[in-house]
Structure formats: structure tokens, C-alpha cells
Length: 446
Image (cartoon, rainbow, N blue to C red; front, side, top):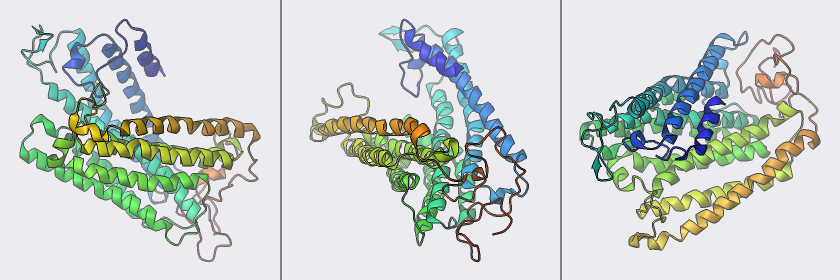
């Protein structure tokens, strides 16, 4: 909260907030107005909070598991949170160091990122020089790529829980999913320079990052394929959480597929900084994170409140959101292939060769408005259902197997009212010989 409030306060400075783009590349960010200084301080505070939260998650998962809760019995959502915490813990410190070095450049007269002979507005900029702007890019992207998985892994965990619950069958190849997410977390630290192919790196190092980028797609494909295979032969329930989870799979898959050309230098160089990059990135992050988040809210809402969310309002939220998302981001891929740059002040109107695709800007704008308006039914649903939604008649309305459904509804202080012992895997659905199609982890008899 402190970091967020500090960052928002920069809007009231004479020069306004930081204006160097979300990547804050040097040397521009080293010489811009005071909003950048506030941005750096607030980022440092937010990073510290993330590090402390990561430690909390890791220590809790390692030391406070219930008896019988081995790592093999952890739900995939907890595995996703554990790997996410490690990514934050290991990837954020380089950006914290970079923020400190840039503060030194701005406030103490150092030149970690300021090169010699820098001209600003036609005048030589008086600094000691000798710095390297590319150093900032390396430190930034060493966080920047793991950060993508920080966003997407929790959503993958949520979707896995919901698909297992609503297919009424165990996750196919669940051990392989665990190994894949660990491998994905490790590889995310050795692909960062596929963001910097245009900096003139040599062909050897380019080949290395191209190779690791192609390899990192393998664990993602395994996880998504496993979820698709789980749907086969399942007794699928098409409730609101499941609709969002099902929409997540092709959207995330398409986002990953469109990223392959950006992982290869030969195709990334002409596509870099075009609308294609925006389309790819947001097909991964926007539908992935947002649809996963909504799926989780609809799924765990009855546990948190004791009431179900309204289905009619849920459908009014889901369908316009899914359709509008595609009309926002898919046209960007078309424009990017035509070379429309993403940072043109006029949206590319001066690009004569792009005039045939600029009409998509109007489509994107209307779709963005529809996407925003589609969230109104969700907001109404969220607050209306707290007091007027259908009451749940048990602590486990979805007939799930994981431990959170063994708590009272809503959970009180300390969550559980009695000691918990875990006896089986997290997705024990439709076991042979069981009297019902779900066997909770904390129940000894199947």
C-alpha cells in the first residue's frame, strides 16, 4: 500500500508522473523529471513487499503442511504459488539493484547507465559518462520475463483446480505437470535476452537465447495439453467457473503460439516494437490472467461468502468479455504483420503502407469499450450476491476434494475447526469402489 500510494502521489508533482514507458529504459529515464525518482522509490518499496510475501509463501508451504500432505499430494494451485514465490524471490532483486543504481545516477551524479558524449536537446549532457544503457535492459528483463510467469502460473493453478472439479476425474499426467512447472520456472531465468535481439548481440549468444526460448514452450505445452486431455471422457459441468477455465485454455495457447516468431531473431527483428508484440503479449497475459482470475472468483466465492453468484449475470459477464477480448487483440496481430509501430503518436496514420489495416483501430476501440462495459454485470453480481445470492447448503457446494472445502463457510480464524490429516491425492474423483464421485483428501474412507 505504501509503494502504491507513493507512486500515485507522483501525479501531483510539477512534471507529473514517470513518463519513460513501463520499461523505463535509460538514458531517458536517467535525465527525465522528478516523477521518475518517485517511481523508482515506490518500485523499491513494492519489490520489498513482494520479497517478504514470497518468503512467507515458501516457508508456509514447506513448514506448515498438514500431516500426510506430501509434496506429491499438493494441489497444482499450491505448486503454482510455490514456483511463483521462488520466481519473485530470485528475479526481483536485480530490478531492485537496478532501481538503486538509477537513483544514484539521478541523485548522486553517477553514470551507471549514462554513456559518454550524450547529447540532450542539441547540448552535451554533463555527466561523468562511461555507463552502459544496455545494463539497465539486462537487469530489467532478467525480472521482466520471469514476471510473465509470475502472472500466468497462479491462473494455470486456478484453472487446473476447476477443470479437475468439473470433469469429475483426476488430472491426466499430474506428476508430469509438477515436473513441467518446476522446469518452466528454472528456464524462465535464461530466456530474458530474447527481448533484446535488436541491441546487436552476437550470433552465438542469439542462438543460445533462441534455443532456450523454444525449449521453454515445451513445459507450457505439456501443462495445457494435459488439461485438454483431462477433458476427454469427463462428465463436464458447464458452470460459470468452468466456462472461464475453458476459455482460458485456447486463449493462452494461442498467445503462446503467436510468441514463437518473436523468440527467433530472424522474425523478431521486423516484428519488434510493432502491434504484433502487443497482440501476442496480451493474448497470454490479458485473457490468461483475467479469465483465470474470474474463474477463481466464481469458484471460491461460495466458500468466502456462503452464497453463489448469479448465473444470469455471470453469462452477461462471460460472453461479451470473451468476444470483446478477441476483437481487441487479434486485429493487433494483423496490424503488426503490416509493420504498424506501437508507439506512433498518430496510431500509424503516417505509415502509407499501413493504411489498409488502420481501420482496425476503430474496431479495437469499440471492442475495448465493450470489454470495459462487460465488467459491470460482474461488479453488480459480486456485491449483490453477498447478501442476495443463493445460499449454499454445505461447506462443499462444488463437491471438491481439496482441503479448503473442509473449512466452515465462510472460514473463521485459523480456518479449520479440527486437526486435518491428508490421506490421498488432491484430485481423487470417480475412484473405483467409492460411494460417491469425489473423495476429499481429509477423509480416510473412500
